[in-house]
Length: 109
Image 1 (cartoon, rainbow, N blue to C red):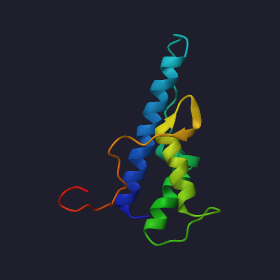
Image 2 (cartoon, rainbow, N blue to C red):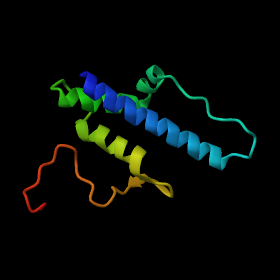
Image 3 (spheres, rainbow, N blue to C red):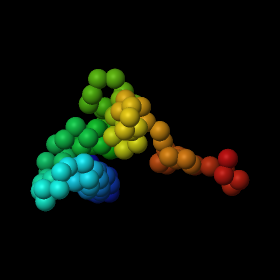
């Protein structure tokens, strides 16, 4: 994986770890216990880390490692990042969201 892609994957994993920690702390009884932060190597080995890595490798021209195609990983990641808490199998992308690398004409259409 290129260093730029590794930095992006790591940034997403660390951001998700912070968000999960925040959610858990707000849902627990006030006990003062915090969710233990995982080292980046462990986050990379997680299911989310595997899917992020698979997309990064796919973009770099390597074969997709899971059954199906790269949309399996894209769907998994979208559910992790944008899931509906009341219906975890669904997700809603933010308004004006565009896939990375998408180009538009000068009018923004």
